[in-house]
Amino acid sequence: MKFLTSIGLACIIIALLFSCMSPRNMLQEVTAKTEKITVDAAYNAVTSILIDKGFDIKMANKDIGIITTEYKQFASVEPYGKPPFDLYLQIKVKIKKGTDGKVHISLSPISKDVNRLNAAAFTEHELIYLTPEEQKYPRTNEKAYLLGQIMFNNVVIGVSELTGIGMEQLEYRTYIKDR
Image (cartoon, rainbow, N blue to C red; front, side, top):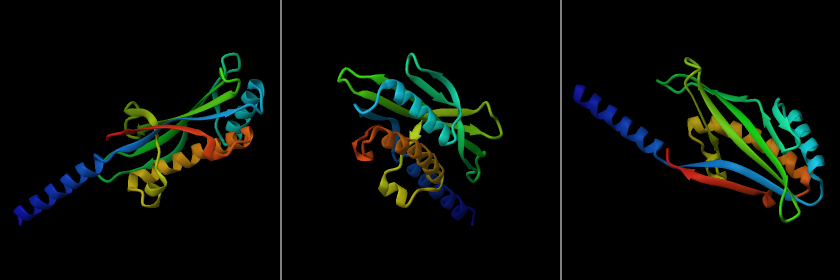
């Protein structure tokens, strides 16, 4: 009986290792480029969009075109056998006039995973971005990141409406990270 238990435990550990090794898409930045508005109008409108979507502004400087939000909690996860985590989202915005004469609005999502039992144990990283295929059948821990992705996409939709360009015309900068 002990032998079967050890084989079962070994199989579970191997399965967990392989599931953790699959790559993740990480979203670094979404950029909108438009000629329809000025830098000042874009700055004021993006600030309004962030506040409307429930974010608190941490730092805003119109002269250099930067807006940073406070972290906003989007999920709590309690994985079996591991400490519980609270997941937070922060959005950093850069607004500038490009050399092409267009106003560039760049949104960068930052995810912060905080160990609820030890608040000093946290990690910050780009937002995990699930593709439409991954959204159909997300793994348990990815369901929580899907909530953060939805929260971020609500802001992106607001910026898309502001600039008057479709979501498909926005530039998404992602990379694949091994777990």
